[in-house]
Length: 249
Ligand code: LIP
Image (cartoon, rainbow, N blue to C red):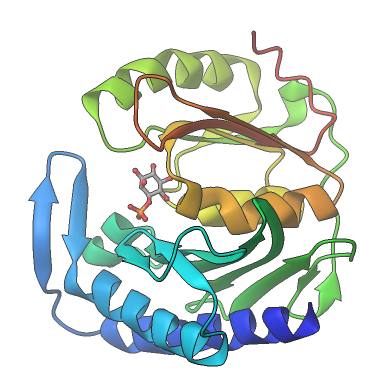
Protein backbone atom coordinates (compact mmCIF):
# COMPACT_ATOMS: atom_id res chain seq x y z
CA UNK A 1 0.00 0.00 0.00
CA UNK A 2 2.91 2.38 0.84
CA UNK A 3 4.22 1.86 -2.68
CA UNK A 4 0.87 2.96 -4.16
CA UNK A 5 0.65 5.93 -1.80
CA UNK A 6 4.18 7.13 -2.59
CA UNK A 7 3.50 6.81 -6.33
CA UNK A 8 0.26 8.81 -6.00
CA UNK A 9 2.04 11.53 -3.99
CA UNK A 10 4.88 11.77 -6.53
CA UNK A 11 2.45 11.99 -9.45
CA UNK A 12 0.33 14.61 -7.65
CA UNK A 13 3.39 16.77 -6.88
CA UNK A 14 4.69 16.48 -10.46
CA UNK A 15 1.25 17.45 -11.81
CA UNK A 16 1.08 20.29 -9.28
CA UNK A 17 4.45 21.64 -10.45
CA UNK A 18 3.15 21.68 -14.05
CA UNK A 19 -0.06 23.48 -13.01
CA UNK A 20 1.77 26.02 -10.83
CA UNK A 21 3.95 27.04 -13.80
CA UNK A 22 1.01 27.05 -16.26
CA UNK A 23 -1.03 29.22 -13.86
CA UNK A 24 1.17 32.17 -14.81
CA UNK A 25 0.96 31.53 -18.55
CA UNK A 26 -1.69 32.16 -21.26
CA UNK A 27 -4.57 29.65 -21.20
CA UNK A 28 -5.32 27.43 -24.20
CA UNK A 29 -9.08 26.69 -24.26
CA UNK A 30 -10.24 23.39 -25.78
CA UNK A 31 -13.95 24.08 -25.26
CA UNK A 32 -16.28 26.42 -23.35
CA UNK A 33 -19.92 25.96 -22.35
CA UNK A 34 -22.34 28.06 -20.29
CA UNK A 35 -21.07 26.71 -16.95
CA UNK A 36 -17.86 24.91 -17.82
CA UNK A 37 -14.49 25.34 -19.55
CA UNK A 38 -12.07 22.68 -20.77
CA UNK A 39 -8.36 23.61 -21.04
CA UNK A 40 -5.41 22.06 -22.85
CA UNK A 41 -3.56 21.96 -19.50
CA UNK A 42 -6.23 19.54 -18.11
CA UNK A 43 -5.26 17.07 -20.86
CA UNK A 44 -1.48 17.62 -20.55
CA UNK A 45 -1.63 17.14 -16.77
CA UNK A 46 -3.59 13.90 -17.09
CA UNK A 47 -1.08 12.64 -19.69
CA UNK A 48 1.75 13.29 -17.20
CA UNK A 49 -0.08 11.50 -14.36
CA UNK A 50 -0.96 8.56 -16.64
CA UNK A 51 2.66 8.17 -17.77
CA UNK A 52 4.05 8.31 -14.21
CA UNK A 53 1.52 5.85 -12.72
CA UNK A 54 1.20 3.32 -15.53
CA UNK A 55 4.97 3.18 -16.16
CA UNK A 56 5.27 2.10 -12.51
CA UNK A 57 2.18 -0.18 -12.58
CA UNK A 58 1.72 -1.44 -16.19
CA UNK A 59 -1.07 -3.81 -15.09
CA UNK A 60 -3.20 -1.00 -13.71
CA UNK A 61 -5.74 1.15 -15.58
CA UNK A 62 -6.70 4.82 -15.29
CA UNK A 63 -10.16 6.43 -15.31
CA UNK A 64 -9.88 10.20 -15.55
CA UNK A 65 -11.82 13.37 -16.43
CA UNK A 66 -9.80 13.63 -19.65
CA UNK A 67 -10.28 10.00 -20.70
CA UNK A 68 -9.45 6.39 -19.86
CA UNK A 69 -6.27 4.29 -20.33
CA UNK A 70 -5.87 0.53 -20.05
CA UNK A 71 -8.30 -2.28 -19.29
CA UNK A 72 -10.99 -0.74 -17.04
CA UNK A 73 -11.81 -4.21 -15.65
CA UNK A 74 -8.31 -4.54 -14.16
CA UNK A 75 -8.30 -5.02 -10.35
CA UNK A 76 -6.37 -1.76 -9.81
CA UNK A 77 -7.84 1.40 -11.33
CA UNK A 78 -6.53 4.93 -10.75
CA UNK A 79 -9.36 7.52 -10.57
CA UNK A 80 -7.95 10.92 -11.53
CA UNK A 81 -8.99 14.55 -11.84
CA UNK A 82 -5.81 16.21 -13.14
CA UNK A 83 -7.10 19.76 -12.53
CA UNK A 84 -10.10 20.12 -10.25
CA UNK A 85 -11.36 23.69 -10.27
CA UNK A 86 -10.66 24.32 -13.96
CA UNK A 87 -12.88 27.40 -14.16
CA UNK A 88 -11.11 28.88 -11.10
CA UNK A 89 -7.77 28.17 -12.83
CA UNK A 90 -8.94 29.81 -16.07
CA UNK A 91 -10.02 33.00 -14.27
CA UNK A 92 -6.83 33.18 -12.18
CA UNK A 93 -8.57 32.21 -8.92
CA UNK A 94 -5.86 30.31 -6.97
CA UNK A 95 -8.20 27.58 -5.68
CA UNK A 96 -7.66 24.32 -7.62
CA UNK A 97 -5.94 20.97 -7.11
CA UNK A 98 -4.89 17.55 -8.39
CA UNK A 99 -6.93 14.57 -7.18
CA UNK A 100 -5.66 10.96 -7.47
CA UNK A 101 -7.32 7.86 -5.98
CA UNK A 102 -6.63 4.13 -6.35
CA UNK A 103 -9.56 1.71 -6.54
CA UNK A 104 -8.89 -1.99 -5.88
CA UNK A 105 -11.76 -4.33 -6.71
CA UNK A 106 -14.22 -1.41 -6.53
CA UNK A 107 -12.95 -0.19 -3.13
CA UNK A 108 -11.01 3.09 -2.85
CA UNK A 109 -7.83 2.22 -0.89
CA UNK A 110 -5.59 5.28 -1.47
CA UNK A 111 -6.38 8.99 -2.01
CA UNK A 112 -4.16 12.04 -2.55
CA UNK A 113 -5.23 15.67 -3.11
CA UNK A 114 -2.58 18.33 -3.83
CA UNK A 115 -3.10 22.11 -3.84
CA UNK A 116 0.01 23.41 -5.64
CA UNK A 117 -0.62 27.07 -4.79
CA UNK A 118 -0.68 26.50 -1.02
CA UNK A 119 1.65 23.45 -1.27
CA UNK A 120 -0.87 21.39 0.73
CA UNK A 121 -0.81 17.59 0.25
CA UNK A 122 -3.58 15.48 1.78
CA UNK A 123 -2.88 11.74 1.85
CA UNK A 124 -5.15 8.92 2.94
CA UNK A 125 -5.05 5.14 2.81
CA UNK A 126 -7.32 2.40 4.07
CA UNK A 127 -6.77 1.56 7.75
CA UNK A 128 -4.47 4.53 8.52
CA UNK A 129 -4.92 8.05 9.92
CA UNK A 130 -4.81 10.54 7.02
CA UNK A 131 -2.22 13.32 6.92
CA UNK A 132 -1.87 16.89 5.66
CA UNK A 133 1.78 17.59 4.78
CA UNK A 134 2.63 14.67 7.07
CA UNK A 135 0.53 15.80 10.07
CA UNK A 136 -2.48 13.62 11.05
CA UNK A 137 -5.93 15.29 11.09
CA UNK A 138 -9.57 14.59 11.99
CA UNK A 139 -12.91 16.00 10.92
CA UNK A 140 -14.51 18.75 13.04
CA UNK A 141 -16.90 17.90 15.90
CA UNK A 142 -19.43 20.67 15.24
CA UNK A 143 -22.94 19.13 15.53
CA UNK A 144 -25.06 22.30 15.52
CA UNK A 145 -25.84 23.37 11.92
CA UNK A 146 -26.29 26.97 13.12
CA UNK A 147 -22.54 26.98 13.94
CA UNK A 148 -21.45 25.10 10.82
CA UNK A 149 -19.82 26.22 7.59
CA UNK A 150 -21.12 24.24 4.59
CA UNK A 151 -19.87 24.17 1.01
CA UNK A 152 -22.47 23.63 -1.72
CA UNK A 153 -21.61 22.90 -5.37
CA UNK A 154 -23.99 23.55 -8.29
CA UNK A 155 -21.97 21.63 -10.89
CA UNK A 156 -22.17 22.41 -14.62
CA UNK A 157 -25.67 22.06 -16.04
CA UNK A 158 -28.99 23.90 -15.88
CA UNK A 159 -30.46 20.77 -14.29
CA UNK A 160 -27.86 20.55 -11.50
CA UNK A 161 -28.20 24.30 -10.86
CA UNK A 162 -32.02 23.97 -10.69
CA UNK A 163 -31.79 21.04 -8.25
CA UNK A 164 -28.98 22.64 -6.21
CA UNK A 165 -30.38 26.14 -5.66
CA UNK A 166 -33.19 25.15 -3.21
CA UNK A 167 -30.62 23.27 -1.15
CA UNK A 168 -28.28 26.27 -1.21
CA UNK A 169 -31.13 28.56 -0.13
CA UNK A 170 -32.08 26.25 2.73
CA UNK A 171 -28.48 25.86 3.95
CA UNK A 172 -27.81 29.64 3.63
CA UNK A 173 -30.63 30.26 6.12
CA UNK A 174 -29.87 27.38 8.50
CA UNK A 175 -26.01 27.20 8.57
CA UNK A 176 -23.66 29.86 9.93
CA UNK A 177 -22.19 30.27 6.46
CA UNK A 178 -22.43 28.65 3.02
CA UNK A 179 -19.56 28.65 0.52
CA UNK A 180 -19.37 27.93 -3.23
CA UNK A 181 -15.63 27.35 -3.68
CA UNK A 182 -15.58 25.70 -7.12
CA UNK A 183 -13.44 22.63 -6.38
CA UNK A 184 -15.21 19.48 -5.16
CA UNK A 185 -11.92 17.76 -4.33
CA UNK A 186 -10.73 20.67 -2.14
CA UNK A 187 -14.20 20.81 -0.55
CA UNK A 188 -13.81 17.13 0.38
CA UNK A 189 -10.26 17.72 1.71
CA UNK A 190 -11.50 20.70 3.76
CA UNK A 191 -14.30 18.59 5.30
CA UNK A 192 -11.75 15.85 6.07
CA UNK A 193 -9.45 18.20 8.01
CA UNK A 194 -12.23 20.17 9.74
CA UNK A 195 -12.09 23.47 7.80
CA UNK A 196 -15.64 22.76 6.58
CA UNK A 197 -18.32 20.76 8.40
CA UNK A 198 -20.07 19.47 5.28
CA UNK A 199 -20.04 19.59 1.47
CA UNK A 200 -23.08 18.92 -0.74
CA UNK A 201 -23.29 18.64 -4.53
CA UNK A 202 -25.65 17.03 -7.01
CA UNK A 203 -24.42 15.67 -10.36
CA UNK A 204 -20.71 15.37 -9.55
CA UNK A 205 -18.31 12.86 -11.18
CA UNK A 206 -16.40 10.06 -9.41
CA UNK A 207 -13.01 11.61 -10.26
CA UNK A 208 -14.01 14.82 -8.39
CA UNK A 209 -14.70 13.01 -5.09
CA UNK A 210 -12.88 9.61 -5.07
CA UNK A 211 -9.71 10.71 -3.27
CA UNK A 212 -11.68 12.94 -0.88
CA UNK A 213 -13.89 9.97 0.00
CA UNK A 214 -11.10 8.01 1.70
CA UNK A 215 -9.67 11.15 3.35
CA UNK A 216 -13.05 11.85 5.02
CA UNK A 217 -13.79 8.22 5.94
CA UNK A 218 -10.34 7.72 7.56
CA UNK A 219 -10.64 11.09 9.36
CA UNK A 220 -13.87 9.97 11.08
CA UNK A 221 -16.42 11.57 8.75
CA UNK A 222 -19.16 10.16 6.53
CA UNK A 223 -19.64 10.32 2.74
CA UNK A 224 -23.06 9.52 1.28
CA UNK A 225 -22.73 9.04 -2.50
CA UNK A 226 -25.83 8.17 -4.54
CA UNK A 227 -25.69 7.54 -8.31
CA UNK A 228 -28.01 9.92 -10.22
CA UNK A 229 -30.60 7.94 -12.20
CA UNK A 230 -31.11 10.90 -14.56
CA UNK A 231 -27.42 11.55 -15.31
CA UNK A 232 -24.90 8.95 -16.58
CA UNK A 233 -21.87 8.41 -14.28
CA UNK A 234 -22.96 11.26 -11.98
CA UNK A 235 -23.49 11.23 -8.23
CA UNK A 236 -25.23 13.23 -5.54
CA UNK A 237 -22.85 13.57 -2.61
CA UNK A 238 -23.33 14.62 1.00
CA UNK A 239 -19.98 14.59 2.79
CA UNK A 240 -19.77 15.64 6.44
CA UNK A 241 -18.05 15.30 9.80
CA UNK A 242 -20.68 12.67 10.59
CA UNK A 243 -22.26 14.62 13.47
CA UNK A 244 -23.56 17.88 11.99
CA UNK A 245 -27.34 17.72 11.76
CA UNK A 246 -28.04 18.78 8.15
CA UNK A 247 -31.67 17.70 8.46
CA UNK A 248 -31.80 16.81 4.77
CA UNK A 249 -34.53 14.42 3.65
C1 LIP B 1 -15.61 21.08 -10.84
C2 LIP B 1 -16.00 20.61 -9.46
C3 LIP B 1 -16.99 21.58 -8.81
C4 LIP B 1 -18.20 21.67 -9.64
C5 LIP B 1 -17.81 22.13 -11.01
C6 LIP B 1 -16.82 21.18 -11.66
P1 LIP B 1 -13.73 20.47 -12.61
O1 LIP B 1 -14.77 20.12 -11.40
O2 LIP B 1 -14.87 20.56 -8.69
O3 LIP B 1 -17.36 21.15 -7.53
O4 LIP B 1 -19.14 22.54 -9.05
O5 LIP B 1 -18.94 22.19 -11.81
O6 LIP B 1 -17.42 19.92 -11.80
O7 LIP B 1 -14.56 20.52 -13.88
O8 LIP B 1 -13.06 21.74 -12.33
O9 LIP B 1 -12.80 19.29 -12.62
